[in-house]
Image 1 (cartoon, rainbow, N blue to C red):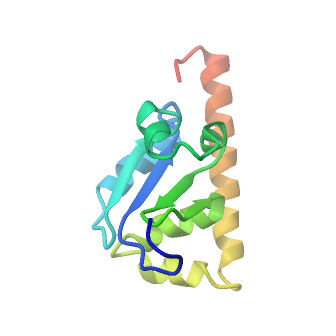
Image 2: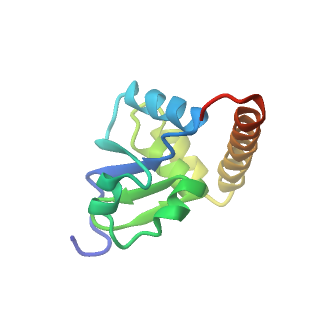
Length: 131
């Protein structure tokens, strides 16, 4: 592990592989041009548990979690901003979202995504569609 304050050179995004929205966003991230390499790993997978034994893996299913190569951990809206920060086309937006003026918008985006995810999961369960 590198000392705190070191530059982030690689990010791991833990996502719920059983969530249609999460898988869609994973695929979208894979199609973007990266400034920082991303590893997209299913949350609670053996790979995630092997790489990050210190994490609460049940919590990584509840909200997006991003881990930096220096051991930094971001969750929720902060993790969302880090994903955008890693992308060439979206880094300027991420820099703004990380400010006090912009962060409420990042939080609102995460709340909207959580609502969509909740509705999708509820429909999957109620409609008998496998997750």
